[in-house]
Amino acid sequence: MAKNKIINWKPDRSKFPDIGQDGKPVVDLASQKYVKIWHGPNHPGVTGNMSLELTVNGDEIVDAKTHVGYLHRGFEKLMERRKYIQCFPIVCRMCVAETDFPEYIYAAAVEDLANIEVPEMAQWLRTLVLEMSRLQTLLRVVPGQGGTIGLGLGVQWGVYLRDLILDLFEELTGGRIYHMYIIPGGVRGLLPDGFKNRMEEILKKVDDYVIRLTSLMYDNAVYKKRTIGIGVIPTDWVDKYGIVGPNARAAGFKRDIRKDNPYLIYGQLDYEPFTTTESDIFARAVVRLEDLKTTVDLIRQIIAKMPLNGDIKAKTPNVLHWKIPKGETYVKSESSRGEFGFYLVSDGSEYPRRINLRGPSYTHAITVLEKLLINANISDVSALMVSLQTCPPEIER
Amino acid sequence: MKELLQRLEYRFDVSDIVQKRENQTFLTIDKKHTISLITHLRDIENFSHFVLLTAVDWIEDNLFQLTYILHNPEVNIDIAIRTMISRDNPEMDSAHHLWEQVATYQRELKEMFGINFPGSPGVNDSFILEGWDDIPPYRRDFDTKKYTEETYFPRPGRQTNDPAEYMKNKLYPNG
Image (cartoon, rainbow over all chains, first blue to last red; front, side, top):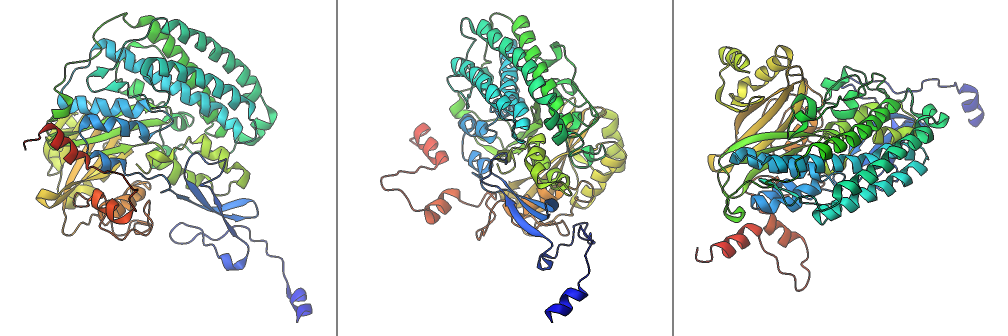
C-alpha cells in the first residue's frame, strides 16, 4: 500500500486557496497545506494589545483576522456615569500614545455644546501642546518602523529625545504621559520661565537626529529592500476603506484636517502637508519623517508668534454643577495617525448622554490590515502593522 | 451647504436639520429611507469618506438613535444622519455594501447595543466581549456597578461608590 501511495503521488502545484463566494479564501486546514498561527497579543511586533490570527502557507499569509478585546475598559460607558469634568482622566487614556488629542477634542466638544469661546492665548497653548504631543509620538513611531525589521538603534535615539519632550510636559502640566492640561474653556497654566529656550535646545537635537536617522534608516539598503514595494495601498482603497492621515497622504491624497478644516490657530501657521504616491511601507515612513520635520517647524512658528500673556481660560459655570445644553456635535482633529474625533451627545443634564470616539485604527487595524496581509510574507507582518500606525485602545474604547 | 440641504429636502423627507457649524450639519430621516440617503450622498454628492456609525440609547422614549457621519473631502463638510429605531425590535438595514468597514461598526453595535444588521458580514461574531451572557452592556438599563459586584470578587476593605450617586450625595446632601 505504501509503495502504491508513493507511485500515485502527484505534485500539488496549487499554492493559494480558492476564493469563495463571500470573497474570502477557502482554507481547508485538514489538507495540511495551511497552518494557523497567532501573532500577538504578546508579541514584540504587535502595536499594543491586539492579535492577528494568521493562516499561512509556508511563510506566506493566505488569510488574516484581527482580534481585539484584550484592552476593553468600557470608557464610553464609564463616562455616562461621570460629570463632564470627571471624564478628563478617562479621555486621555483612550490613546496612550498621544493623550492630548482626546483631551482637546473632548474639551472642544463640550465647549461647542456649551457655546464657550476659548481665549486666544489658550488656543496658542493648546496648539503648542498638540504639536508637542505629535512630536513625542513621531519620535517613537518614525524610528519604530526600522525597529520592526531589526534596526533598533534609531529607536533608542528616538526614545531618548522623546523623554526630553516628556520632561517639558512634566514641567508644563505635572504629568509625563497623561497631562489633563486642556480643560473646558482653556488650559491650566501659562508656560514656565525659560520653557521656550529649553524647547529650542531640544528641537536642535531633533534636527540633528533627523539627519542621522535619514542616513541610518532611509538610506539603508536592507531597510529599502524590506520596505519598498511592500504593503502598497491602492488609491481606490482610501475612500473605500476610510484611510486617513499619513496613510492617505502616502497614497497621494493631500488630506490634513489642520489644513482642510483649520481649528485652533492652525490657520495662522504656514505649512504644507507632504504627500507622495508610492503608497508602500517606505512611502508611509517618509511621510511620517516629513511630518516630524513639519511638527518641529510648527512648534518653532508657534513659539515665535504666540502672545506673551493673556487669558488662558474662559469663564465657565461651576464644573461640578454644569448642565450642558441639549444637543450633539462631532469634533475632530488631525492626530499623528489621522482623523481623531469625538461624537458627543448631551441630554441637558450634568452627565454626557453618549460619547463615541472615532479613531483611525478602527479601519486601519481591521479592514485595511486584514487586506494588506493577504499574500504578504510572515516576516513583514510587524512592518505592515507599524506602517499603518495602529493603536488598539481607540478600537475598543 | 445651504444648497446641498435644499437638494436633500427636495429629494428626501429629512427633518430636524441643525447646522452646528459652517461645515457640519445634523439631520434626521426615517429608518426606511436612511440607506437610500446615504447611498445618494456617497454617489451623487461626493460624501466619499465614511466617518463613523454609532448609537444612542433613548431608553425613556423606547428608541435607539443611529448616527451615521459622512465627510465630503472635496468641500470639507460633514453631514450627520440620525435615524430612530424601536428598542423593542432593534434592527436596521446594513450599509456594509457601501463601505466595507461599516461591517465592523455594525458588529460592535450588535454586541454593545443588541442592534441587529441582517446580512452584515460577521455581525454575530463576538467583537470585544467573549462569552457575554448579560444584556448588551452599552444599553442604559445595563447596571455596570451591579454587574461588577455580582461578577468580581471584592477585595477586603474596599469601598465602592457609584460615581453619579456619590457626587449627588456630596453636592446635594439634602436631596
